[in-house]
Image (cartoon, helix red, strand yellow):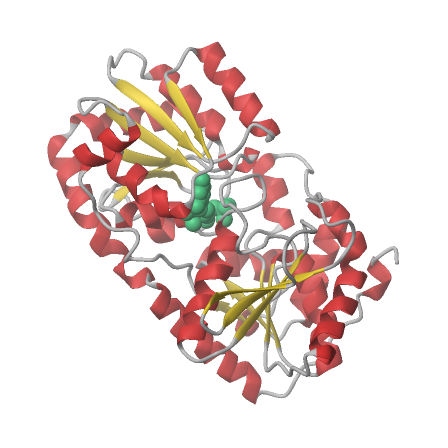
Length: 407
Ligand code: UDP
C-alpha cells in the first residue's frame, strides 16, 4: 500500500487526515486477516517514529524518509517523491521483499505507484479518494494545482485498475479524465460495524456533558472548505428560534485556517456551537449516539464515511446531494438529501426531521440495516478479487512520469 501523504496511524480529523487514512488502516487490517501481508509506505513526518510499526498481525506501516521529517503541504510533497521512491526501493532490497500488487492512495501515491510498478513489473491498483478537477469545480476556484491534475491524468492512463468509491466517481473518471470504463471498479468504502453500533443516547449525552432534552445536530469531519461547515452554520442561524437546538462539531484543530473561519462565522451568526476538535475514531460512536442527527453539508464527497458511520449507530443523516452521498443516503428512507450550498434547504429539512415524529422513527429504524452491506469484510473480499484479477492479467505498460518533478 502506498499512502505517501497520510499515515494510517495519524490522528484523524485534522487538516489532511481523514477518510483516506481510515480506509487504508481498516482495509490493510482486513486484508491481513485474510492472509494478505500488507506493508503501508508513508512519508516520515516525525524523526522520532520507528521505521517499521506493526499495527495488526500481518500489517505494518513503514515510515519512509523523503524531505524534512515534519508535516508538509501536499503540494510540497511532490518535490520529494523521487526520494520517496528511492527509499522504498532501498527498503525492499534491504529486506529482500517481493510484492505482488501495489495499491496506491491519492494522486501523490499514484505517481509513486506507477514508477514502482514499472520497476518491479507488478500490477498497480490506484484509488484517488478525491479528484482535483472535481474539487476545483465544487469550490468554484482553482485551489487544486494544474500539476495535481496532470499527475492524476497520467496515473489514470497508466494504472492497471482504478478503484472508485461510487458510481459517481467512476463516471467522473471516465468523462473528465478519459479513464477506460472497464479499468474502473466501483468498490465502496467500509464501516467497522462492531465499533459503530447503536448506543444509549442518555448515557452518551451524559458522557459528553450534553443535556438530555436538547436537540443535537452533529457535524464530523476535517476542517476543509469542501466540507461546507459554513452552510450548516448558516442553517443553524435560521433555526435559532428553537430554544434547545445546538450544534456539535467534531474534527479539526486550532491550527486549521478553516476552523478559525468557522469559529468567527459562528460568533458573527450567534449560533450555539460546541467545537470539540478532532477525536479518536473510538470515541465517535458516543457522538453519533448522542446526536439526533448527523448533517453532511459537503460541496463534494467521493463517498462520505461519516455518513455510513452515523447510520451504523442508528443516527439518520441529512446530506448534500453530491458525489457518492446519494449512494449511501436513500432520500426519505435512512436520511434526507438536500441541494448543496443551500442553508435554507438544510434548515427546512432539519426542522422537518425534528418535528415529524413518524418520519424520525422511520429514518432511525432504517439507519443501521441500510449500511450492513458496507462491512470491511465485504470490501476486503472485493478488493482481494480485484488483486487476483490484476495479478493474473499481463502487466500494462506504464508511462514515465519522471519529467513532471523538479528533481
Ligand atoms: N474521523 C475521526 N475523527 C475525527 C473526524 C473524523 O476519526 O475527529 C474519521 C471518521 O471516522 C471517518 C473519517 O475520519 O472515518 C472521515 O472520512 P470521510 O469519508 O467522511 O471524509 P474525508 O476525510 O475522506 O474527506
